[in-house]
Length: 102
Length: 158
Image (cartoon, rainbow over all chains, first blue to last red; front, side, top):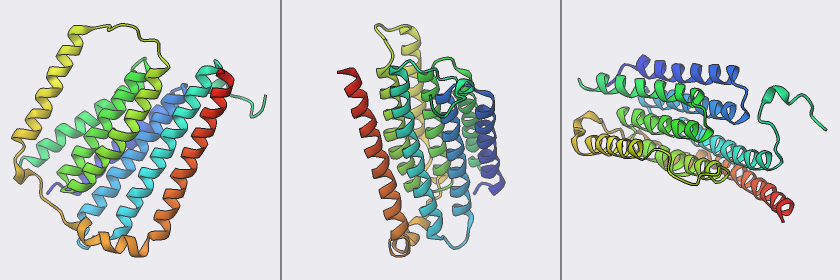
């Protein structure tokens, strides 16, 4: 079987790329895609830990279900925001979102 | 013995695809790159022996989330004609060859089957049923919310 630190390194790399992308991008949708990348990285880490323990625990699978649900909810929110903001010609640049109410 | 090399290839593809998400100009191409990340993460699950979780990852993320994202974003774009037919043919052939090689030539000994999820599954539905209900309610609330936003959007259109 693969050494565990291989899987962990892949997970950390994916997480780091996600964070770097969120920090350097201005587009709202791209930032949300970066959050999705971070969720995938956390899933890879969870699966890695789950695969390498001697006694399998159900809490790893339940955590995986929770991460799937959070990712699905985020995608639903992305689509809803994207369609609405596109229709009202709202700028996707997050640096221009300076007010909570207008 | 072949697993480290296969994992190295998949890890390189994951890193390259995740960079593409932020580098490409069009949002639809970024979503396609994200879909590739989802597929490659399922390959990682497969290399770890978690076949059922890899299948669920493909069903939920690629079959559900990515499809939903691509349809929603592509529907807002005004695409009237094919832009690059030779690239389309080349990409189709490359993907067919790659997926065919994986399906027909991947040795079964490469994937060490793990029955950990089989051992843990009965306990999940006994000890964690409340959390699973909470997850289902969360998804239900999000779906209702998106339907309300779409209804308000339809009122603005009509």
